[in-house]
Image 1 (cartoon, one colour):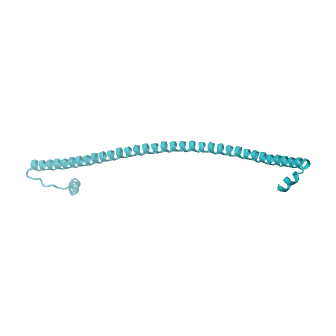
Image 2 (tube, helix red, strand yellow):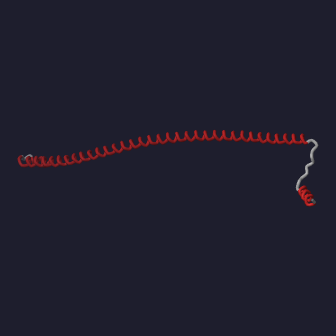
Image 3 (cartoon, one colour):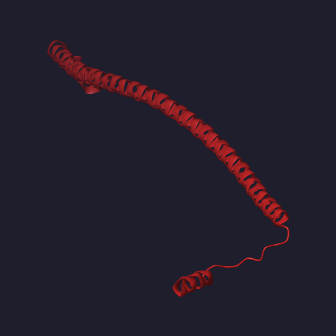
Length: 156
């Protein structure tokens, strides 16, 4: 039995002894109210956190929508610029082709004019040579048949 008593005493050493309040019901009710207040505060904080999270989500959504709208506007502007640039390049290409055709036509006209000038120069030389031959023939004829040819030769 002494061992049993010792064990009981040793077991009590590890147990805390609470003084029993005179009114257990009111203490328990106070703890319930405290717990309810803690839960109420936790719920209020949770609602505040949820409201902030929703506000942040709404703001983020608005920023995303705004960014998407700006991105779409930038894409539209880029497409318009590309389309305009393509049109200008096509116009420039057509103008360049037309200028090349005009240059080729001008070169052809210049070549034709040069050929006509060469032909005209050759004809002019031939005419001068023919005129010189005619003049020589006239001189010979007049010199051989008339005495005044000496007068004409002297004058010429």
